[in-house]
Amino acid sequence: MNRTDFEILRDFEGKRISQDIRFVRCAALYPVAEVGKLPIGNQSGTDLRMNLRFNPETESKTVNVFVPGTGPTCRLDVDGPRHGAAGRSHKHALRTERCPDRNLPDEVVPCPDLSGRSMREVFEQFCHLARIEFHGTFFSPEEA
Image (cartoon, rainbow, N blue to C red; front, side, top):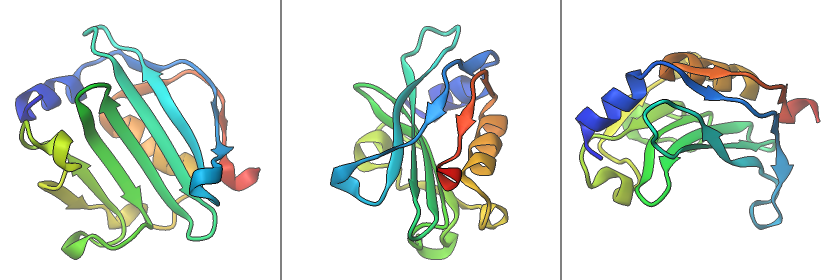
């Protein structure tokens, strides 16, 4: 997948998540709670998935979209570890065909306006920007 393919998929209308979102604590990542491999329905036929992570100790949040067998295509990190000049809240996007193998290092954009927002707000903003409709119930990890 290259940047052009990514932009077509990103801008494609009709993407949707149709199941409830419930975070589960993962022993291997304690104290992180996560939601894994949410299918993102779309009319292009691309197998598109989303992972969500929330760390209650640092209040860091991650939304990661990936194509199984290809790798990540877009990731939003909020209140996480500093990423150079992009700071603690930033978005990674696919730039080249090698980016998924290299964990999206080439297109990192600061998102300071998302700092301090809840996991629900981060998820909703990501879905808005990526044109993903959500048709389920979001059970916030901060409220658990």
